[in-house]
Image (cartoon, rainbow, N blue to C red):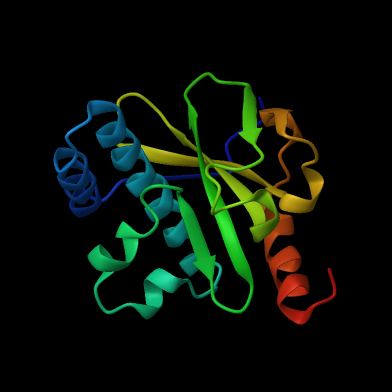
Length: 167
């Protein structure tokens, strides 16, 4: 695997928020999904802020309320551009399966990109590994290699082309 391009610590308030969402679930599996999705969406949202892209979470005066809509699917919306799927990768994982849709309401065609976030053990930081434009994924389920992810140097141009309608 290539060197990780972006790595930063998880803020304690985000970790606590993720634990809170997880504890609200009656089902352990759903609770874990909400825990990891909260951290993954936060990481991508944090990165989008570094890149000067506004997200739907930035528009809401209460981040806690806004993230609740992203918990199930781990989507992050960039107003006027589209939705990014925030995909969690386990440490050491080299191949990723990306399903065509997570549920009937959110088909792959509604997304503009996938950003892949590694949550290492111990869970004290995140590593953003790369991205793929949604148009690069074809078929019901696509298996990709972490080595095939595009570097974040290309992401800003890609998002700006979508915003301008030139993609």
